[in-house]
Amino acid sequence: MIKIQESLEINALPDEVWSIVGDLSRAPEFTPTIVSARVDGLNRLCTDESGNEIHEEMGDYSVELRRYSWRHVKSPLPVKSSSGWYFVKENGKTCEIQMVWELEFLDPTMELQITPNLEGAARLTLENVKRLAEGKS
Image 1 (cartoon, rainbow, N blue to C red):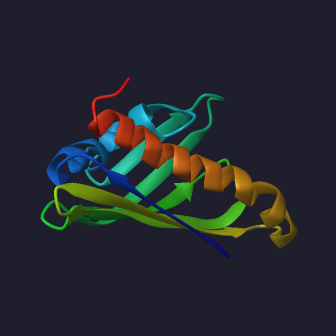
Image 2: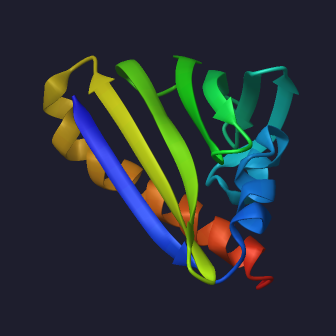
């Protein structure tokens, strides 16, 4: 199992950042390769640019704490399991967004091959949230 952890300081109020990442339908705006998202309660169905479907179940969703977890029920990745969480916390006049992603590959030898791409995607996801929250195009 691998654990990817990323965090980024954002020059915006925590509620502004939460309005982006906490709105489950906005995933295509900041998640690389995701082109659409349909939300039904705490379930989300995303489609990537190759047409693959990603089914997610959300948990621990808290507006007050500005956090939620997810679990991929169906994913195009060659994994036994994939889950993680987002957390937006106040940091003085700015805020910090944190993302943790845990994956267990079907073939553990693939970890070295795939993990760098997933780490890059996690970083890019947070950079995209920062760009949106700080009003940069």
